[in-house]
Image: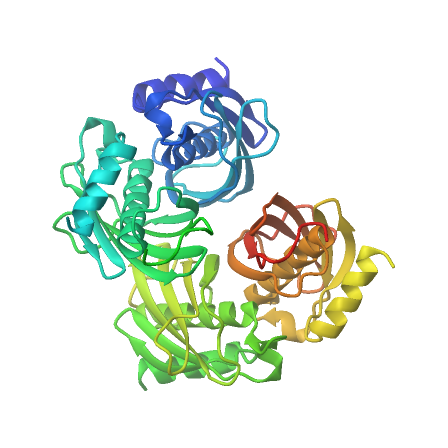
Length: 139
Length: 139
Length: 139
Length: 139
């Protein structure tokens, strides 16, 4: 089973509420995707901020699992988002995550969020995850 | 009609997806509340990060509307959250917002998030909203 | 020797470059002060952003030392600042820090920065410090 | 005169306290450099956080001037930094800025900070600048 399949299986079992899907994962990065429907929209036909934050958090989590293995207890400790452009109401949101630091206890990554097909990011996120101290890197 | 009732009516019409309710608003502040059920939880019985961010964004928005009047085009430009403690799975999340700066084009506020009945914040948020330039303050 | 005197002595020995002074410390909080001269100003007669960040970092550090004792290896892991008003060029900058969370490995605090005598904050900071794992709380 | 020379001249006249120098500027990006000496160090032989923030702010400012022309009144409205690795005490700090959004009133950019010769960033910054409304883009 590839690490991507492992993560998909783990998230299906442990995060059944998650609605984002994984395009790619590996090499300290991940790309995830969120389809957009009524629940994800706000008035004016734009994707809601919390949906964008959710996609970013998902991209970070997947990139981390791809790097250090399945770590059920990794938790977000901080997340900063800048909203930059209005997302399309009828395109998937794509989250591209790059890990900037993979430390023993803290992992830092950035995520650019796009409306599919447009190369100008709609938002940019920096987030940190805390890794339980008993977990070994690359387990 | 009080400003609180005006905001409730405006949000019902324009943000039917919003699920947070308003406890208080006024004096550059607002307190909002989100009930917690299956959709808001993550494994381990904790409230998901995006739900906390949504409550914070709602608290900021309500505090801003309470200060400058109904401004449909105010948009979040940035939001930073620090997750500090594990929220209860069976308590409402309360968001208490204080506006730090009400400028002509930018408004900055902070939000402390609590599980109801516990005075230790589960998360802390700082957010900024951009106000369309044609809007007058205190209209 | 009070904890305030301990911190002053420690900082004099270990951070001779620091120029901020301690007004108060204790009870998960601290107030520090920075005099403003030519080196701290930018054109237009305003205090430079990095000076404000330095005062905030100092306030956080002092509040942390006041809470957990002298910990030479505590390091800032993140710092977010919102600049809100133009500081006076001829008033001390006052930094008031409140610790929001004192965890075993991470400490989160917020700092409001003022030009002395004006109750409207010129900037607001949230910062996190990482505490070496071998350090005991309240040692 | 190139835009780089224009910016150097402008900063020499208006920011005589600035100590960072410009390596490159243009195409929505800039690279700046700060030499490191006693004043920039903290105990343990590391570069102080405020010095890193200053370099990041300088890189952002130079990239913005390179994009929209000499705008004396552009001001930082927010800056978030994650400290990731210990900088060398005897290498220049290099700040590489990329602008993520160049809006009419707000500009968002990110900066990676390096100890020269090491490709792992020591810190990562996201900052926003506010542009006075009377200024035209690309003037």
